[in-house]
Structures are given as structure tokens and as C-alpha cells.
Length: 476
Image 1 (cartoon, rainbow, N blue to C red):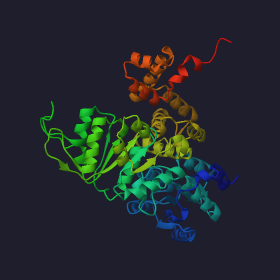
Image 2 (cartoon, helix red, strand yellow; image 1 turned 135 degrees about the vertical axis):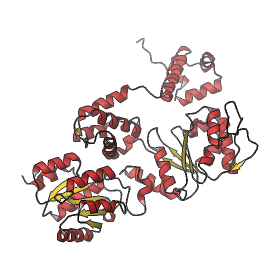
Image 3 (cartoon, one colour; image 1 turned 90 degrees about the vertical axis):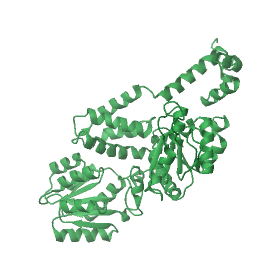
Image 4 (cartoon, rainbow, N blue to C red; image 1 turned 60 degrees about the vertical axis):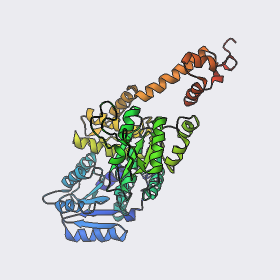
């Protein structure tokens, strides 16, 4: 078996889900070879295909180009003086984690190819390289690489790793609205990356050189949240020993991201609405209003339509915040992104802790891709970090992924999840005791009927399902 045949078989077959997010002809390739004639020949071949090509006659020269224009892919000779292709690859991974690298060599051997691919090199081809095989390898590498660079200043979205068509459509919408100051509401399950998208919109906006300030509206008690947002004067309350400007002023000229806006108390919703309408705030304990210039992006995992109709969220504030709605999908709906995200996260975590870790075995990647991920990207981060911490091999095995997934399933829920679980169990128990009588159930729970109905709606519970006539007959 030839080396080229062996390595080609190691590359996955292209599927529709692996198609690149942008035309490969717009990609920028950094070509590295210490043979000037071959460098010129390969450069002409790549340019004839429509690629933008930068050439370098050494590894050191290649690295110097990174500061000027980060390429989408590096195509490098293996044997070069001072810094060979593998040494260049390792330095590229340190500087730009996840950068795809294809290595060419006239001195190839199966052990070299296996070693290179285990270390993370995307492909290993022998010279003279077949034109079609070279282009196929390049297309494959670009298809599995997040489109965070290229034409149009794509660095604004560099932290969002995806090749999902669904995510690409959301990012296109985000880029379109970023240029204006309209308020955006980002919705979707917890852990899907709502703050990352908000930050990306800030980076794509005219406010990019001003602050991006984020706050979780559900993580602070009401008085502290009010103080954090609007600031306070000295002596405004016990412990206010000095003036505090607040996050509206800290974000002046930039973007204020209000995460979990659905958990903001109603009294603060009134004050927030007034600030957005009047474009000025009044700090706690102050008699003077201060003008503000901020762009508001908010986010929630809650159903604000339901919260609004239940009286838990103000309708006027809802429509002011929800000028544009961007809904992020759960990770299970963008399964094609899971291997890509896992590889990117391994590179980042390994660079900090265990540089010998190069990635996941194919079996491990398949297990990751087929898992449900109820905690979405945040859960994937935890699993990757556990695997890197526990592995002693360069390629993380399937068994370790299975162990990490089991540990995640057995982990303690968050406080919000635990409270919601208790509420639902309690309501079911009370409804069973009272056989679906809401008046009696509300009395036992110490709530009025209106509040009790809101609780039932929040947990999708129908009191009629607990009445004797609705219960299954178990006597027959």
C-alpha cells in the first residue's frame, strides 16, 4: 500500500454537513517551502483554483506573516532547515489553535504520516502531489474549519465556532443588525452561547472600540442589582460609603448586555423601561439624572411571551427589548458542530495544562456527536476539560468520554434547576392530595388562586389531569 493511499483513507468522506460556510475559493492559504521553484509552481496551481496565496521560504518567515494576515490554512513542506514542518505546525497551534495544516514531503513514510496525524496535522501527502488529491485535502480541511476569518472582516465572530447552516443564518442576521442601535433579544436554552453572540454583535458594531459590559440579572438580589445597573450616591443605603457609577455609565458609548432579563424583578423593569425611553438614569439616592448612550442587548432562556401574559414581565418593556429576536438552537440541533467544538476546546485546554494531548479518538468523537447535551455548549466544555485532566494519552479514548458524560449526568443540578424541580414535585403532590381542586391546593400551598395558576402554567401542569375522573382505572 502506498503512503498516499494510506493517508487518504484516514480522511473522512465528505458529507453535505461538512460543506464550508463560505466558498473555498475565497480562502487564504499560506504556502511554505524552502524550494523557490516548487513554491512558485504550487502557488500558481493554487491561484488558478481561485485561492489567495501567501508564500514563505521558511518556517520563521511563515510565522512572521501571521501578524499581518491570518490564513485559513497552511500548506507546508516537512523537511526545511531551522524549523521543519512539524515544528512549524506546533508553533502554529500554540499561536492559532485549530489552524488546519497539510504537510507535503518527498521523504514520506507511513510512520511519519501516522505520527503527524496523531499530533493533529490534518493531512500528510507525498511529493509529487496529485493535483486532485491536493485540492480534495484542502477542501476537506476548510470544510472542517470554523469560518472565523476571510473576506469582510470576519474576526468579529472569531469566538463562535460553527459550520452549522442554522447558526450561519443567525450570524448573518446578527451582522446585519449589529450596525444599528436597535435592541436585540437573544433567546435559547441555557449554555448555548448567548453572551458570545452578544459580544460578537458588539465587535461588529460601530461601538466596538467602546466597552462591552455584561450582567446576569438573575444572579443578584433586587437592591444590589439596582445599584449595579444604575449606580448609587454616597449614603444612599446602609453600606454605601462611596459613590458608585453603575454599569450603565461603565458601558457608556458601548454595549450593555442584560443576561437572564426574564428574572429581573417587576419594580426594576419599570426603572429600566424609563431609562431606555428617556436615555438617562438616576442613581439610587441621587436627585439628578445622568444622560446615557448605550446599546442594549438582552438574553433569556425563559418564555417571555408566557411571562408577559402571566404578569411576570412588562409588555411595554418586552416590545422595547425585542425589536429583533435571535433564537439560538440547542447543541443537539447543530450536531455537526460538536466534533469541531470539541477539537477547538481540546486545543485550548491542552495548551494551558497538558500540551501532549492532541485530540479525541474517532470513537470518542462519535460518542460526543451522538450525545444529547442537555447542558449544551457549557456542558461540552465541562466534559472536554474533564477528559483532558484525566487522560494520559495523546488521543482521548472513548471510555474516558463515557466516564465524563456519566459524571455530568450525576452532577448536582444548578440552584435554579433544583428549585424548579422541587416546585414541580411539590405542585404534583398537592394536586394529588386535593384531587385537582385548585382552591384547596392553593390554600395548602399558602398562595392565592391567581399565583397558584401561574405556578401550574409555568410547570405545564393541568389540574384536571388529577381529578378522579381523569385518573386511570386500576381496579379492573
